[in-house]
Length: 239
Image (cartoon, rainbow, N blue to C red; front, side, top):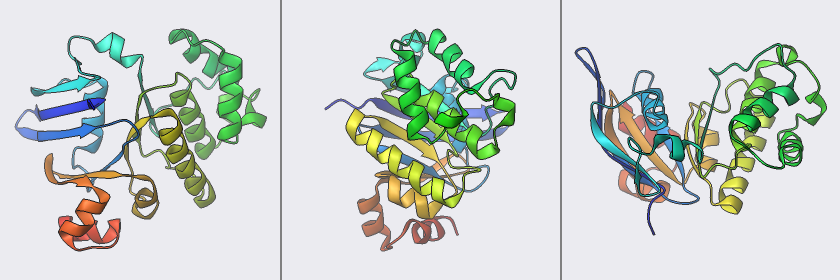
């Protein structure tokens, strides 16, 4: 089976600082990979590089067996992204924001998909409300609805549970797992919620100062480092 994403020796420098230092990993259908590390480890830079927002100085990125640098527009139709740092236009309603995105991605059956996802993320009653009226947690859930709307094959998430109440963190995590299995969706996410992250991910990439300190399936990593939780693994690797 070919990986849906293959990353080889990514290097990114800003002036004299190396932000990504030889990062390599593979992602297969239904994989959920957690990128874990302290602040400043390079997690967000890695995500933005995988989106093409940041260009690596060295290294290769292949999506679906195709060179990302040569097939960026085609590939990005099958890749989606959500982050706590993205704000949607406040002057539009929830529905209008989603329809603008759907138009850009030429999504068919928009109303059906939109309503289903709004129900999944418990936002259907906010459909006609101006986006400015949403709480930070509701805005994050709207970003997640938008990210799922184009039926991506790969989904990149930067702190997707930020601003969510504990009940929603658990609920959204279950949705990620369900969508990943049913749709063969591959997910990469960053999060500081290690307890909840452990319930979701199948693989982990632990990085510090742009370098890989550990990478593999959760089972393999727990056995290798003789730990029984992601929190234990974090402290064993980083502290």
